[in-house]
Image (cartoon, rainbow, N blue to C red):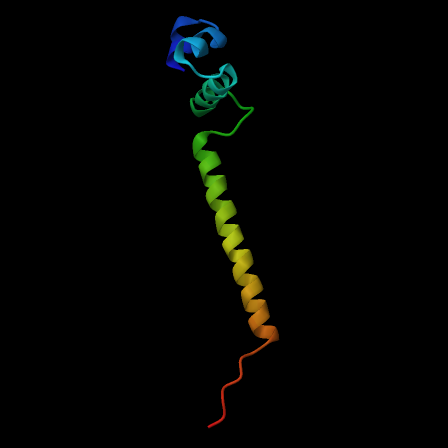
Length: 81
């Protein structure tokens, strides 16, 4: 990514030299630009990570709410002594 930025060479040429697909390098360059605040058409890596963490937390809360809703609908009975 630094080579693309510092040399001004086309992404396809740099990608070929590095042995990576040009679209992969293009995505990495765009993400680096977003992380530096040079693009506003994609989230920064930090925000992407935060979103992923929030999605995981939401999944846990949803699973917990289903579990507790089932517990309320079907309360456990204690065995008689």
